[in-house]
Length: 291
Image 1 (tube, rainbow, N blue to C red):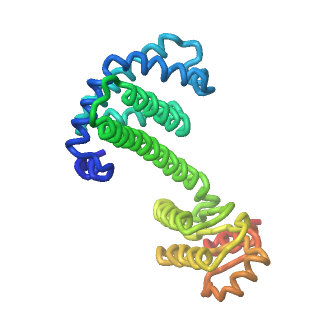
Image 2 (spheres, rainbow, N blue to C red):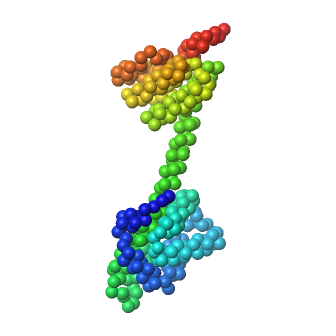
């Protein structure tokens, strides 16, 4: 993911002076960092997430502590460049992969900020610009947190999108039920994105199968509003443009009443109350007699 680094720094009001102040903080806190990591993990061990993600695996804990030490070294160098951002986003990727809750991450960053700030304000002799140093440190911590959480959110949204796509595929089973006849039984709630997917998949299948009759069964659809009704009409009209007769089956009394009340014009589209009736019509359309 490409980042506009200067724009990112501007959003968090990070100036060149802030960067120098963070490096100064790194010098002031250098001797404290081993103690900081020890205190931070002492806090983490009190959280239920610790046993969940570490258990009794001491070698894994040691490895993570070493990585965190490297992370803070990079933080205090404060070179906000592509590599810096890549490292933070990698942390987000790891957290997303293991399913680390966002609340424990934010709580951990809050504790880290508190430990580092408390140590800064206890330094003797206290630097005259200690307030500016603490402020710059906070800005950089916010930037770090944002990059991690933004990557977690990006991955979660990608997973949701893929899951939604998979569910759409599963919920749009365009199935050949006879040579020249396709059936699409719809279940659940219809919205504009789903009806668009239905149209795309149906038309593709009609073209592949050289379909003569397309049955759209809506007996499993809970309700139909104006937008959805019009979309269903568009789907059937689109199939007709491909030389395929369309039938909408499963029209319940409630849906029939709704369509009439909404004033939706179904034109010459064939409709039936049952799938059986639709199938009988479909067989006649392809000149098949079943005895």
